[in-house]
Length: 601
Image (cartoon, rainbow, N blue to C red; front, side, top):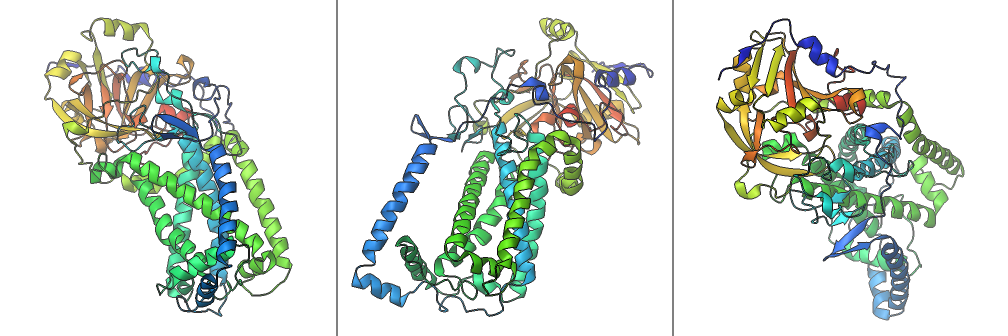
Protein backbone atom coordinates (compact mmCIF):
# COMPACT_ATOMS: atom_id res chain seq x y z
CA UNK A 1 0.00 0.00 0.00
CA UNK A 2 1.54 3.27 -1.11
CA UNK A 3 -0.83 5.91 0.19
CA UNK A 4 0.45 9.46 0.15
CA UNK A 5 0.48 11.72 3.20
CA UNK A 6 -1.86 14.68 2.69
CA UNK A 7 -1.02 18.23 3.59
CA UNK A 8 -1.91 19.05 7.21
CA UNK A 9 -3.67 22.23 6.13
CA UNK A 10 -5.60 20.79 3.22
CA UNK A 11 -9.06 19.44 3.04
CA UNK A 12 -11.25 19.93 6.10
CA UNK A 13 -12.67 23.31 5.21
CA UNK A 14 -12.97 22.33 1.55
CA UNK A 15 -14.87 19.16 2.42
CA UNK A 16 -17.28 20.89 4.75
CA UNK A 17 -17.96 23.54 2.13
CA UNK A 18 -19.27 20.80 -0.14
CA UNK A 19 -22.29 20.29 2.13
CA UNK A 20 -22.87 23.84 3.39
CA UNK A 21 -24.25 25.66 0.38
CA UNK A 22 -27.55 26.68 2.00
CA UNK A 23 -27.71 28.83 5.14
CA UNK A 24 -28.61 26.84 8.22
CA UNK A 25 -32.29 27.44 9.07
CA UNK A 26 -33.58 27.97 12.58
CA UNK A 27 -35.83 25.19 13.93
CA UNK A 28 -39.05 27.21 13.97
CA UNK A 29 -38.36 28.74 10.56
CA UNK A 30 -38.09 25.41 8.70
CA UNK A 31 -41.16 24.37 6.80
CA UNK A 32 -41.87 21.86 4.06
CA UNK A 33 -42.98 22.75 0.57
CA UNK A 34 -44.57 19.62 -0.88
CA UNK A 35 -43.64 20.67 -4.41
CA UNK A 36 -39.89 20.80 -3.73
CA UNK A 37 -39.44 18.37 -0.84
CA UNK A 38 -37.19 15.34 -1.45
CA UNK A 39 -36.12 16.63 -4.83
CA UNK A 40 -39.55 17.73 -6.02
CA UNK A 41 -41.11 14.30 -6.42
CA UNK A 42 -44.57 14.50 -8.02
CA UNK A 43 -47.24 13.67 -5.46
CA UNK A 44 -48.37 10.39 -6.98
CA UNK A 45 -51.17 9.11 -4.76
CA UNK A 46 -51.38 5.60 -3.37
CA UNK A 47 -54.01 3.23 -4.66
CA UNK A 48 -56.43 1.25 -2.55
CA UNK A 49 -54.58 -1.94 -1.49
CA UNK A 50 -54.39 -4.71 -4.05
CA UNK A 51 -53.70 -8.38 -3.28
CA UNK A 52 -52.03 -10.78 -5.68
CA UNK A 53 -53.85 -14.06 -6.28
CA UNK A 54 -51.69 -16.18 -8.56
CA UNK A 55 -50.65 -13.80 -11.32
CA UNK A 56 -53.65 -11.50 -10.99
CA UNK A 57 -53.92 -8.40 -8.85
CA UNK A 58 -57.29 -7.84 -7.18
CA UNK A 59 -58.35 -4.54 -5.59
CA UNK A 60 -59.61 -5.10 -2.07
CA UNK A 61 -62.05 -2.17 -2.04
CA UNK A 62 -65.19 -3.54 -3.67
CA UNK A 63 -64.62 -7.16 -2.60
CA UNK A 64 -64.20 -5.91 0.97
CA UNK A 65 -67.40 -3.86 0.82
CA UNK A 66 -69.29 -6.61 -0.98
CA UNK A 67 -68.11 -9.41 1.27
CA UNK A 68 -68.85 -7.35 4.36
CA UNK A 69 -72.41 -6.55 3.29
CA UNK A 70 -73.15 -10.04 1.99
CA UNK A 71 -71.41 -11.64 4.95
CA UNK A 72 -73.48 -9.65 7.45
CA UNK A 73 -76.72 -10.48 5.65
CA UNK A 74 -75.87 -14.18 5.47
CA UNK A 75 -74.76 -14.20 9.10
CA UNK A 76 -78.02 -12.61 10.26
CA UNK A 77 -80.08 -15.08 8.19
CA UNK A 78 -78.17 -18.12 9.46
CA UNK A 79 -78.16 -17.01 13.10
CA UNK A 80 -81.86 -16.17 13.10
CA UNK A 81 -82.63 -19.54 11.54
CA UNK A 82 -80.47 -21.37 14.06
CA UNK A 83 -82.27 -19.78 16.98
CA UNK A 84 -85.51 -21.32 15.77
CA UNK A 85 -84.25 -24.84 16.53
CA UNK A 86 -84.92 -26.26 20.01
CA UNK A 87 -81.39 -27.68 20.27
CA UNK A 88 -79.94 -24.20 19.68
CA UNK A 89 -82.30 -22.71 22.24
CA UNK A 90 -81.07 -25.33 24.71
CA UNK A 91 -77.45 -24.51 23.83
CA UNK A 92 -78.01 -20.80 24.47
CA UNK A 93 -79.79 -21.57 27.72
CA UNK A 94 -76.83 -23.71 28.86
CA UNK A 95 -74.27 -21.18 27.63
CA UNK A 96 -75.94 -17.77 27.77
CA UNK A 97 -72.79 -15.94 26.70
CA UNK A 98 -72.02 -14.26 30.01
CA UNK A 99 -71.19 -16.63 32.83
CA UNK A 100 -69.14 -16.78 36.01
CA UNK A 101 -67.94 -20.25 34.96
CA UNK A 102 -64.99 -18.76 33.02
CA UNK A 103 -64.53 -15.43 34.86
CA UNK A 104 -65.82 -14.29 38.25
CA UNK A 105 -68.10 -11.27 38.50
CA UNK A 106 -66.32 -8.14 39.71
CA UNK A 107 -68.25 -5.56 41.69
CA UNK A 108 -65.28 -3.18 42.02
CA UNK A 109 -66.07 -1.43 38.74
CA UNK A 110 -63.46 0.12 36.47
CA UNK A 111 -60.73 1.90 38.47
CA UNK A 112 -59.46 5.35 37.47
CA UNK A 113 -56.07 4.07 36.26
CA UNK A 114 -57.79 1.70 33.84
CA UNK A 115 -60.11 4.38 32.50
CA UNK A 116 -57.26 6.85 31.88
CA UNK A 117 -55.09 4.21 30.27
CA UNK A 118 -57.97 3.27 27.98
CA UNK A 119 -58.05 6.87 26.74
CA UNK A 120 -54.27 7.12 26.33
CA UNK A 121 -54.18 3.79 24.50
CA UNK A 122 -56.85 4.95 22.04
CA UNK A 123 -54.99 8.19 21.22
CA UNK A 124 -51.59 6.49 20.93
CA UNK A 125 -52.94 3.72 18.71
CA UNK A 126 -54.61 6.13 16.29
CA UNK A 127 -51.36 7.98 15.60
CA UNK A 128 -49.25 4.82 15.54
CA UNK A 129 -51.51 3.35 12.87
CA UNK A 130 -51.69 6.55 10.86
CA UNK A 131 -47.91 7.06 10.87
CA UNK A 132 -47.54 3.37 10.00
CA UNK A 133 -49.59 3.89 6.85
CA UNK A 134 -47.20 6.69 5.86
CA UNK A 135 -44.20 4.42 6.43
CA UNK A 136 -45.77 1.71 4.27
CA UNK A 137 -46.32 4.30 1.52
CA UNK A 138 -42.55 4.80 1.23
CA UNK A 139 -42.12 1.23 0.01
CA UNK A 140 -45.71 0.41 -0.91
CA UNK A 141 -45.31 -3.35 -1.24
CA UNK A 142 -45.30 -6.32 1.10
CA UNK A 143 -43.34 -9.52 0.50
CA UNK A 144 -42.44 -12.74 2.28
CA UNK A 145 -38.97 -13.23 0.76
CA UNK A 146 -35.97 -11.56 2.41
CA UNK A 147 -34.83 -9.90 -0.84
CA UNK A 148 -37.96 -7.88 -1.69
CA UNK A 149 -37.74 -9.17 -5.25
CA UNK A 150 -39.84 -7.15 -7.74
CA UNK A 151 -42.86 -9.16 -8.82
CA UNK A 152 -42.90 -11.25 -5.63
CA UNK A 153 -44.97 -8.80 -3.58
CA UNK A 154 -48.31 -10.11 -2.30
CA UNK A 155 -49.80 -6.70 -1.48
CA UNK A 156 -49.24 -3.30 -3.03
CA UNK A 157 -50.72 0.20 -2.91
CA UNK A 158 -49.33 1.39 -6.23
CA UNK A 159 -49.05 0.01 -9.76
CA UNK A 160 -46.40 -2.35 -11.10
CA UNK A 161 -42.76 -1.38 -11.56
CA UNK A 162 -42.13 -0.30 -15.16
CA UNK A 163 -40.57 -3.34 -16.83
CA UNK A 164 -38.21 -1.22 -18.93
CA UNK A 165 -36.63 0.34 -15.82
CA UNK A 166 -35.36 -2.77 -14.06
CA UNK A 167 -32.02 -2.91 -15.87
CA UNK A 168 -29.51 -1.88 -13.19
CA UNK A 169 -26.76 -1.36 -15.73
CA UNK A 170 -28.61 1.79 -16.77
CA UNK A 171 -27.80 3.75 -13.65
CA UNK A 172 -29.32 7.00 -14.90
CA UNK A 173 -32.82 5.56 -15.48
CA UNK A 174 -33.18 2.45 -13.31
CA UNK A 175 -36.29 2.43 -11.10
CA UNK A 176 -35.28 3.26 -7.54
CA UNK A 177 -37.01 2.65 -4.24
CA UNK A 178 -37.55 6.39 -3.99
CA UNK A 179 -39.30 6.34 -7.37
CA UNK A 180 -41.59 3.64 -5.98
CA UNK A 181 -42.83 5.71 -3.03
CA UNK A 182 -46.32 7.21 -3.04
CA UNK A 183 -48.21 9.98 -1.28
CA UNK A 184 -51.27 9.62 0.96
CA UNK A 185 -54.13 12.03 1.61
CA UNK A 186 -53.01 14.46 4.32
CA UNK A 187 -55.69 13.24 6.73
CA UNK A 188 -54.71 9.62 6.23
CA UNK A 189 -50.91 9.67 6.50
CA UNK A 190 -48.62 11.92 8.53
CA UNK A 191 -47.72 14.24 6.87
CA UNK A 192 -49.09 12.65 3.69
CA UNK A 193 -46.56 13.89 1.15
CA UNK A 194 -44.32 11.53 -0.76
CA UNK A 195 -41.08 10.21 0.77
CA UNK A 196 -41.74 11.87 4.14
CA UNK A 197 -40.80 8.69 6.00
CA UNK A 198 -38.29 10.52 8.19
CA UNK A 199 -41.06 12.54 9.85
CA UNK A 200 -43.52 9.64 9.87
CA UNK A 201 -41.01 7.52 11.78
CA UNK A 202 -40.64 10.17 14.51
CA UNK A 203 -44.42 10.09 14.99
CA UNK A 204 -44.56 6.31 14.83
CA UNK A 205 -41.66 5.57 17.18
CA UNK A 206 -42.57 8.29 19.67
CA UNK A 207 -46.11 7.03 20.07
CA UNK A 208 -44.82 3.45 20.00
CA UNK A 209 -42.75 4.18 23.08
CA UNK A 210 -45.61 5.94 24.86
CA UNK A 211 -47.92 3.04 23.96
CA UNK A 212 -45.42 0.48 25.24
CA UNK A 213 -44.92 2.32 28.53
CA UNK A 214 -48.68 2.66 28.90
CA UNK A 215 -49.10 -1.04 28.13
CA UNK A 216 -46.44 -2.18 30.58
CA UNK A 217 -47.98 -0.08 33.36
CA UNK A 218 -51.39 -1.46 32.41
CA UNK A 219 -50.26 -5.08 32.66
CA UNK A 220 -48.53 -4.46 36.01
CA UNK A 221 -51.63 -2.81 37.47
CA UNK A 222 -53.88 -5.41 35.88
CA UNK A 223 -52.20 -8.32 37.65
CA UNK A 224 -51.69 -6.33 40.85
CA UNK A 225 -55.46 -6.02 41.22
CA UNK A 226 -58.48 -8.18 40.53
CA UNK A 227 -58.98 -6.58 37.09
CA UNK A 228 -57.05 -9.37 35.33
CA UNK A 229 -60.05 -11.62 35.96
CA UNK A 230 -62.06 -9.58 33.45
CA UNK A 231 -59.62 -10.42 30.66
CA UNK A 232 -58.14 -13.86 31.34
CA UNK A 233 -60.59 -16.78 31.03
CA UNK A 234 -60.08 -19.51 33.61
CA UNK A 235 -62.25 -22.21 32.01
CA UNK A 236 -62.70 -23.77 28.58
CA UNK A 237 -66.38 -22.85 28.90
CA UNK A 238 -65.44 -19.46 27.53
CA UNK A 239 -65.50 -20.96 24.01
CA UNK A 240 -69.11 -22.25 23.93
CA UNK A 241 -70.18 -19.01 25.61
CA UNK A 242 -68.33 -17.04 22.94
CA UNK A 243 -70.10 -19.03 20.22
CA UNK A 244 -73.44 -18.43 21.93
CA UNK A 245 -72.70 -14.69 22.13
CA UNK A 246 -71.80 -14.58 18.43
CA UNK A 247 -75.06 -16.30 17.45
CA UNK A 248 -77.10 -13.95 19.62
CA UNK A 249 -75.39 -10.88 18.16
CA UNK A 250 -75.71 -12.31 14.67
CA UNK A 251 -79.45 -12.85 15.11
CA UNK A 252 -79.81 -9.20 16.21
CA UNK A 253 -81.33 -10.42 19.49
CA UNK A 254 -78.48 -9.30 21.73
CA UNK A 255 -77.54 -10.95 25.00
CA UNK A 256 -77.79 -8.98 28.24
CA UNK A 257 -75.01 -6.41 28.63
CA UNK A 258 -73.37 -7.33 31.96
CA UNK A 259 -70.01 -5.90 31.01
CA UNK A 260 -69.72 -3.84 34.19
CA UNK A 261 -69.18 -7.01 36.20
CA UNK A 262 -68.41 -9.75 33.63
CA UNK A 263 -67.48 -9.60 29.94
CA UNK A 264 -69.29 -12.07 27.72
CA UNK A 265 -67.34 -14.91 26.15
CA UNK A 266 -66.78 -13.13 22.85
CA UNK A 267 -65.61 -9.95 24.57
CA UNK A 268 -63.13 -11.68 26.83
CA UNK A 269 -61.60 -13.64 23.92
CA UNK A 270 -61.36 -10.49 21.78
CA UNK A 271 -59.69 -8.57 24.61
CA UNK A 272 -57.38 -11.48 25.41
CA UNK A 273 -56.23 -11.79 21.79
CA UNK A 274 -55.73 -8.04 21.49
CA UNK A 275 -53.85 -7.51 24.75
CA UNK A 276 -51.85 -10.72 25.12
CA UNK A 277 -51.25 -11.79 21.49
CA UNK A 278 -51.60 -8.89 19.04
CA UNK A 279 -50.07 -6.25 21.33
CA UNK A 280 -46.81 -8.18 21.98
CA UNK A 281 -46.58 -9.13 18.31
CA UNK A 282 -46.53 -5.44 17.34
CA UNK A 283 -43.17 -4.53 18.98
CA UNK A 284 -41.67 -7.96 18.27
CA UNK A 285 -42.40 -7.72 14.55
CA UNK A 286 -41.23 -4.09 14.63
CA UNK A 287 -37.89 -4.94 16.23
CA UNK A 288 -37.29 -7.73 13.71
CA UNK A 289 -37.27 -5.00 11.06
CA UNK A 290 -34.28 -3.32 12.72
CA UNK A 291 -30.85 -3.89 11.14
CA UNK A 292 -29.17 -3.92 14.55
CA UNK A 293 -31.48 -6.68 15.82
CA UNK A 294 -31.22 -8.79 12.68
CA UNK A 295 -27.44 -8.32 12.57
CA UNK A 296 -27.19 -9.76 16.07
CA UNK A 297 -29.80 -12.53 15.82
CA UNK A 298 -29.18 -13.54 12.20
CA UNK A 299 -32.80 -13.05 11.17
CA UNK A 300 -32.00 -11.26 7.92
CA UNK A 301 -32.83 -14.53 6.13
CA UNK A 302 -35.18 -17.36 7.03
CA UNK A 303 -38.72 -17.36 8.46
CA UNK A 304 -38.12 -14.30 10.66
CA UNK A 305 -36.71 -12.08 7.91
CA UNK A 306 -37.63 -8.43 7.67
CA UNK A 307 -40.29 -8.89 5.00
CA UNK A 308 -42.12 -11.55 7.01
CA UNK A 309 -41.89 -9.17 9.98
CA UNK A 310 -43.36 -6.34 7.86
CA UNK A 311 -46.21 -8.60 6.81
CA UNK A 312 -46.92 -9.66 10.40
CA UNK A 313 -46.70 -6.01 11.49
CA UNK A 314 -49.22 -5.08 8.80
CA UNK A 315 -51.61 -7.88 9.77
CA UNK A 316 -51.40 -6.87 13.43
CA UNK A 317 -52.32 -3.34 12.35
CA UNK A 318 -55.29 -4.76 10.43
CA UNK A 319 -56.41 -6.60 13.55
CA UNK A 320 -56.20 -3.41 15.63
CA UNK A 321 -58.17 -1.44 13.04
CA UNK A 322 -60.81 -4.20 12.94
CA UNK A 323 -60.94 -4.38 16.74
CA UNK A 324 -61.26 -0.59 17.12
CA UNK A 325 -64.08 -0.41 14.56
CA UNK A 326 -66.04 -3.33 16.00
CA UNK A 327 -65.41 -2.20 19.57
CA UNK A 328 -66.71 1.29 18.78
CA UNK A 329 -69.80 -0.05 17.02
CA UNK A 330 -70.59 -2.37 19.93
CA UNK A 331 -70.25 0.47 22.44
CA UNK A 332 -72.94 2.32 20.49
CA UNK A 333 -75.37 -0.54 19.84
CA UNK A 334 -75.28 -2.28 23.23
CA UNK A 335 -76.22 0.74 25.34
CA UNK A 336 -74.16 3.84 24.64
CA UNK A 337 -74.99 5.82 27.77
CA UNK A 338 -74.43 2.90 30.14
CA UNK A 339 -71.19 1.90 28.44
CA UNK A 340 -69.89 5.46 28.61
CA UNK A 341 -70.72 5.60 32.32
CA UNK A 342 -68.63 2.46 32.78
CA UNK A 343 -65.51 3.83 31.11
CA UNK A 344 -65.80 7.54 32.03
CA UNK A 345 -67.06 7.35 35.61
CA UNK A 346 -66.37 3.72 36.42
CA UNK A 347 -69.93 3.31 37.66
CA UNK A 348 -72.94 1.27 36.56
CA UNK A 349 -75.19 4.30 36.12
CA UNK A 350 -77.15 6.03 33.34
CA UNK A 351 -75.92 9.62 33.66
CA UNK A 352 -75.70 11.75 30.52
CA UNK A 353 -72.60 13.54 31.77
CA UNK A 354 -70.22 10.92 30.30
CA UNK A 355 -71.87 11.39 26.91
CA UNK A 356 -70.94 15.07 27.00
CA UNK A 357 -67.39 14.15 28.06
CA UNK A 358 -67.20 11.62 25.21
CA UNK A 359 -68.30 14.22 22.63
CA UNK A 360 -65.73 16.73 23.93
CA UNK A 361 -62.93 14.14 23.90
CA UNK A 362 -63.84 13.08 20.36
CA UNK A 363 -63.74 16.72 19.26
CA UNK A 364 -60.22 17.06 20.70
CA UNK A 365 -59.07 13.82 19.02
CA UNK A 366 -60.53 14.92 15.67
CA UNK A 367 -58.77 18.28 16.01
CA UNK A 368 -55.47 16.53 16.77
CA UNK A 369 -56.01 14.21 13.82
CA UNK A 370 -56.74 17.05 11.40
CA UNK A 371 -53.95 19.26 12.73
CA UNK A 372 -51.18 16.64 12.76
CA UNK A 373 -50.16 16.90 9.10
CA UNK A 374 -50.28 20.72 8.81
CA UNK A 375 -48.28 21.02 12.04
CA UNK A 376 -45.69 18.54 10.76
CA UNK A 377 -45.27 20.40 7.47
CA UNK A 378 -45.04 23.75 9.26
CA UNK A 379 -42.69 22.67 12.08
CA UNK A 380 -40.84 19.58 10.81
CA UNK A 381 -37.68 20.17 12.86
CA UNK A 382 -39.76 20.47 16.03
CA UNK A 383 -41.30 17.09 15.29
CA UNK A 384 -37.84 15.62 14.71
CA UNK A 385 -36.43 17.14 17.90
CA UNK A 386 -39.30 15.91 20.06
CA UNK A 387 -38.95 12.46 18.49
CA UNK A 388 -35.21 12.48 19.13
CA UNK A 389 -35.81 13.46 22.77
CA UNK A 390 -38.31 10.64 23.27
CA UNK A 391 -36.65 7.75 21.42
CA UNK A 392 -33.05 8.82 20.78
CA UNK A 393 -31.82 7.03 23.90
CA UNK A 394 -33.49 3.80 22.74
CA UNK A 395 -31.64 4.00 19.42
CA UNK A 396 -28.39 4.60 21.28
CA UNK A 397 -28.94 1.44 23.34
CA UNK A 398 -29.56 -0.58 20.17
CA UNK A 399 -26.12 0.41 18.81
CA UNK A 400 -24.16 -1.00 21.74
CA UNK A 401 -23.39 -4.57 20.76
CA UNK A 402 -21.42 -5.66 17.71
CA UNK A 403 -23.25 -7.10 14.67
CA UNK A 404 -22.21 -10.73 14.09
CA UNK A 405 -24.72 -12.22 11.66
CA UNK A 406 -23.39 -13.79 8.46
CA UNK A 407 -25.32 -15.50 5.71
CA UNK A 408 -24.55 -18.09 3.06
CA UNK A 409 -24.19 -17.79 -0.70
CA UNK A 410 -27.67 -19.24 -1.18
CA UNK A 411 -29.13 -16.36 0.85
CA UNK A 412 -27.82 -13.69 -1.56
CA UNK A 413 -30.75 -11.77 -3.02
CA UNK A 414 -31.24 -12.04 -6.79
CA UNK A 415 -32.28 -8.38 -6.90
CA UNK A 416 -30.89 -5.46 -4.89
CA UNK A 417 -33.05 -2.34 -5.05
CA UNK A 418 -31.07 0.72 -6.16
CA UNK A 419 -31.47 4.07 -4.46
CA UNK A 420 -29.94 7.53 -4.42
CA UNK A 421 -29.16 10.12 -7.08
CA UNK A 422 -26.04 9.02 -8.96
CA UNK A 423 -23.14 11.49 -9.33
CA UNK A 424 -23.34 13.68 -12.41
CA UNK A 425 -20.15 15.77 -12.10
CA UNK A 426 -17.59 15.86 -14.88
CA UNK A 427 -14.92 14.76 -12.40
CA UNK A 428 -16.84 11.62 -11.47
CA UNK A 429 -17.49 10.79 -15.12
CA UNK A 430 -13.79 11.25 -15.88
CA UNK A 431 -12.78 8.88 -13.07
CA UNK A 432 -15.36 6.35 -14.20
CA UNK A 433 -14.16 6.52 -17.80
CA UNK A 434 -10.60 5.82 -16.57
CA UNK A 435 -11.76 2.73 -14.67
CA UNK A 436 -10.92 4.55 -11.40
CA UNK A 437 -7.16 4.61 -12.08
CA UNK A 438 -7.06 8.29 -11.17
CA UNK A 439 -9.39 7.94 -8.18
CA UNK A 440 -7.99 9.27 -4.91
CA UNK A 441 -9.64 8.81 -1.51
CA UNK A 442 -8.82 11.67 0.84
CA UNK A 443 -8.76 10.78 4.56
CA UNK A 444 -8.17 13.71 6.85
CA UNK A 445 -9.38 15.68 9.85
CA UNK A 446 -8.47 14.69 13.43
CA UNK A 447 -5.87 12.08 12.48
CA UNK A 448 -2.13 11.88 12.96
CA UNK A 449 -1.51 10.76 9.39
CA UNK A 450 -3.78 12.47 6.82
CA UNK A 451 -3.63 10.21 3.79
CA UNK A 452 -4.68 9.94 0.18
CA UNK A 453 -5.29 6.42 -1.14
CA UNK A 454 -5.58 5.52 -4.80
CA UNK A 455 -7.92 2.83 -6.05
CA UNK A 456 -4.96 0.51 -6.51
CA UNK A 457 -3.87 1.26 -2.94
CA UNK A 458 -7.24 0.12 -1.67
CA UNK A 459 -7.13 -3.04 -3.77
CA UNK A 460 -3.66 -3.81 -2.39
CA UNK A 461 -4.80 -3.67 1.23
CA UNK A 462 -6.04 -6.87 2.96
CA UNK A 463 -9.37 -7.83 1.42
CA UNK A 464 -12.27 -9.01 3.56
CA UNK A 465 -15.55 -10.51 2.41
CA UNK A 466 -18.87 -10.85 4.19
CA UNK A 467 -22.43 -11.79 3.30
CA UNK A 468 -24.70 -9.49 5.25
CA UNK A 469 -28.13 -7.89 5.22
CA UNK A 470 -29.12 -4.47 3.93
CA UNK A 471 -32.16 -2.78 5.46
CA UNK A 472 -33.41 0.36 3.74
CA UNK A 473 -35.27 2.95 5.81
CA UNK A 474 -38.09 2.70 3.28
CA UNK A 475 -38.78 -0.93 4.13
CA UNK A 476 -37.13 -3.13 1.50
CA UNK A 477 -34.28 -5.45 2.36
CA UNK A 478 -31.69 -7.60 0.62
CA UNK A 479 -28.68 -9.76 1.34
CA UNK A 480 -25.44 -9.14 -0.51
CA UNK A 481 -21.83 -10.29 -0.55
CA UNK A 482 -19.43 -7.44 0.03
CA UNK A 483 -15.68 -7.32 -0.52
CA UNK A 484 -13.38 -4.53 0.49
CA UNK A 485 -11.14 -2.95 3.10
CA UNK A 486 -12.03 -2.98 6.76
CA UNK A 487 -12.30 0.46 8.26
CA UNK A 488 -10.26 -0.87 11.18
CA UNK A 489 -7.34 -1.18 8.74
CA UNK A 490 -7.91 2.41 7.64
CA UNK A 491 -7.81 3.47 11.29
CA UNK A 492 -4.40 1.87 11.66
CA UNK A 493 -3.12 3.85 8.68
CA UNK A 494 -4.36 7.28 9.74
CA UNK A 495 -4.29 6.86 13.56
CA UNK A 496 -7.27 9.02 14.72
CA UNK A 497 -6.62 11.52 17.49
CA UNK A 498 -8.28 10.89 20.89
CA UNK A 499 -10.72 13.75 20.36
CA UNK A 500 -12.11 12.22 17.12
CA UNK A 501 -15.63 10.98 17.89
CA UNK A 502 -17.31 10.87 14.48
CA UNK A 503 -16.32 9.85 10.96
CA UNK A 504 -17.85 11.79 8.06
CA UNK A 505 -18.19 10.14 4.64
CA UNK A 506 -18.55 12.55 1.71
CA UNK A 507 -20.06 11.36 -1.56
CA UNK A 508 -19.43 12.43 -5.14
CA UNK A 509 -23.24 12.55 -5.44
CA UNK A 510 -25.33 15.59 -4.70
CA UNK A 511 -28.16 15.40 -2.21
CA UNK A 512 -31.71 14.62 -3.27
CA UNK A 513 -32.62 18.27 -3.78
CA UNK A 514 -29.89 18.82 -6.38
CA UNK A 515 -26.48 20.52 -6.61
CA UNK A 516 -27.72 23.73 -5.01
CA UNK A 517 -28.29 21.89 -1.71
CA UNK A 518 -24.79 20.41 -1.50
CA UNK A 519 -23.20 16.98 -1.52
CA UNK A 520 -24.56 13.88 0.12
CA UNK A 521 -22.74 12.95 3.33
CA UNK A 522 -23.32 11.04 6.54
CA UNK A 523 -21.68 10.66 9.95
CA UNK A 524 -20.88 7.50 11.90
CA UNK A 525 -19.66 6.87 15.42
CA UNK A 526 -15.95 6.15 15.46
CA UNK A 527 -16.60 3.09 17.66
CA UNK A 528 -18.43 1.48 14.74
CA UNK A 529 -15.39 1.91 12.50
CA UNK A 530 -13.34 -0.63 14.45
CA UNK A 531 -15.83 -3.45 13.97
CA UNK A 532 -14.94 -6.38 11.75
CA UNK A 533 -18.06 -5.88 9.62
CA UNK A 534 -17.50 -2.20 8.81
CA UNK A 535 -16.06 -2.07 5.30
CA UNK A 536 -15.13 0.25 2.50
CA UNK A 537 -16.60 -2.07 -0.10
CA UNK A 538 -15.42 -2.12 -3.71
CA UNK A 539 -17.08 -5.44 -4.61
CA UNK A 540 -20.68 -6.62 -4.49
CA UNK A 541 -21.63 -10.24 -5.07
CA UNK A 542 -18.14 -11.10 -6.33
CA UNK A 543 -17.94 -8.31 -8.91
CA UNK A 544 -16.67 -4.76 -8.85
CA UNK A 545 -19.24 -2.24 -7.69
CA UNK A 546 -21.33 -0.74 -10.45
CA UNK A 547 -22.24 2.91 -10.62
CA UNK A 548 -25.77 1.99 -9.60
CA UNK A 549 -24.56 0.56 -6.32
CA UNK A 550 -21.84 3.04 -5.38
CA UNK A 551 -18.65 2.64 -7.41
CA UNK A 552 -15.82 3.07 -6.79
CA UNK A 553 -16.36 2.45 -3.05
CA UNK A 554 -19.23 2.51 -0.59
CA UNK A 555 -19.59 2.08 3.14
CA UNK A 556 -20.94 -0.97 4.97
CA UNK A 557 -21.89 -0.43 8.63
CA UNK A 558 -24.18 -3.35 9.41
CA UNK A 559 -25.77 -1.76 12.48
CA UNK A 560 -27.38 1.06 10.50
CA UNK A 561 -30.07 1.57 7.89
CA UNK A 562 -29.21 1.81 4.21
CA UNK A 563 -29.16 5.59 3.68
CA UNK A 564 -26.18 5.78 6.05
CA UNK A 565 -24.19 3.37 3.84
CA UNK A 566 -22.74 6.23 1.81
CA UNK A 567 -22.11 5.38 -1.85
CA UNK A 568 -19.68 6.93 -4.36
CA UNK A 569 -17.32 7.96 -1.54
CA UNK A 570 -14.98 10.87 -2.37
CA UNK A 571 -13.47 11.61 1.04
CA UNK A 572 -13.49 10.72 4.74
CA UNK A 573 -13.05 13.15 7.60
CA UNK A 574 -12.58 12.49 11.33
CA UNK A 575 -14.24 15.11 13.54
CA UNK A 576 -15.05 15.71 17.19
CA UNK A 577 -18.61 16.80 16.44
CA UNK A 578 -20.80 17.16 13.37
CA UNK A 579 -22.56 20.28 14.67
CA UNK A 580 -20.64 22.51 12.24
CA UNK A 581 -21.17 20.33 9.15
CA UNK A 582 -24.11 21.01 6.88
CA UNK A 583 -27.09 21.89 9.04
CA UNK A 584 -25.59 20.08 12.01
CA UNK A 585 -27.91 17.07 12.06
CA UNK A 586 -25.37 14.38 11.11
CA UNK A 587 -26.02 13.84 7.41
CA UNK A 588 -27.70 15.14 4.28
CA UNK A 589 -30.97 13.26 4.83
CA UNK A 590 -30.84 14.21 8.48
CA UNK A 591 -30.50 17.86 7.44
CA UNK A 592 -33.03 17.98 4.64
CA UNK A 593 -35.46 15.09 5.15
CA UNK A 594 -35.48 14.96 8.97
CA UNK A 595 -34.02 11.48 9.40
CA UNK A 596 -32.23 10.63 12.63
CA UNK A 597 -28.45 10.30 12.80
CA UNK A 598 -28.78 7.09 14.81
CA UNK A 599 -30.50 4.50 12.65
CA UNK A 600 -30.21 0.99 14.12
CA UNK A 601 -33.99 0.60 13.63
